[in-house]
Length: 635
View: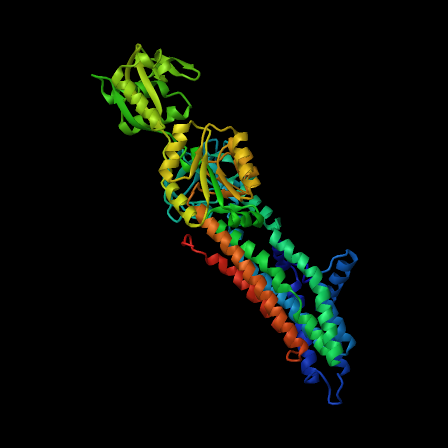
């Protein structure tokens, strides 16, 4: 029972059971046995019938489940620490030390419950995420707000979220302005202003304004629902380090039996052999890895990073290659108009106004950039008629009765039809990696615009910190043209840049590094990144801007697209591995000294049980210290 309760997910079920009451009652029986017979024996030198009965009842409640668990394990050909504890209990009973058997059973099972409680404290950050889901929502039905069960909310419903309320589902803001506290989902302490067109996540807190939102995802499909799913999957995923310790227990049991036998043969005292069996239980070693892994996942979740399993944290810790997608990862993924050059005698606002008038009904990302620029410049957008999209070239429409065209220079007959001054600017825009747009009116160029995706503010800092952490290769894998990829690489300080890559090309580059024995992190956000995310040793997806396919494929999700969390995650993972190694070393040394002390007679069986559990609790507390990892520290 003790050795088999090593999956932390089982601890929650244990806490909800009647085990604690049973253990406490059995402990009370053992105490009553001790008080009845004084030192556990009557004046005649033997335990009384009443004292013996109380001790045996305590063993039946606490010790029998351990023995039965060991028997079932042996029948299933599983060797576990239950066998060690069972032998210790049986040996105590055979030698007539009934109170010893009762106390050993109590201390061992109570220690397991104590370890569970400490381990649960390490998991609190994850548990809080699971508890965040609101139970009701205010839905507008026939023009009237009504409170309904969250299960009855459907995609497309119009909801009202008042100040102080949690956002019930993933939604798009239709009306209103408010500050929303997203720290529960992203780890960001500063509330974010939300207005029409912005997305909000289930479980976040609306602070100071009334907003009307349209539900986009409900139930398990919400960001919170996916978080809960990721967490449950993470708890079931055992990294290789834990499996190594499981294998260790298989040979450890025979070794401890041998030590106990030697102690008995050399000293002739059964109690010393029993003590060796008790202190030899490798519970501290078994707890070394899973407690550290769950504590690290909890700390990552608190920082807005969701990890699907401890094995991926180990991959992050060992990684020496970091590869990034460009658009939406190192860059913001939102093109902006950063420069407008007009023809002689034409105002820049006229160029922007004509372009925005044509683009106003387009869903293309470049159209969004033009419209946003027009909004900030406060230019007048006129109605457009007879709009026609020329695939690969741009748009045509009639504005104020005149033909206006926006797009590639080839839309107006080619670069040679653009005046030399504007042509020079077109070339300059291309050289800096931007997308140039030419605006024509009745076939004559009015001006040119430079539209480009800008590097995220924290991308350069992220690369610098990864270099400090010892990454030998930090590069970009982009499907964009060479100039654009190189511009981003130069701006953020990357060691190399690959451009014009198809999904298979990215996959091949990752496999090439892996064939060289390297451990690869890949960070991406799009459907085209899915193969690379799956192939990398650790695939990291941008949670807010990433596609559903990328989120499903990735091993790790950055909830708010904060690339600066990547070096933090690397440092956290490396600290986790260090603590696992320290825990294992401590457990082995602690067990060795305890076995020697038990065999030499310095520890009684009861003292051995106490010492054994002290070691286990110290290991769990060591793992729990991972929760205190700061957001960033040069390592």
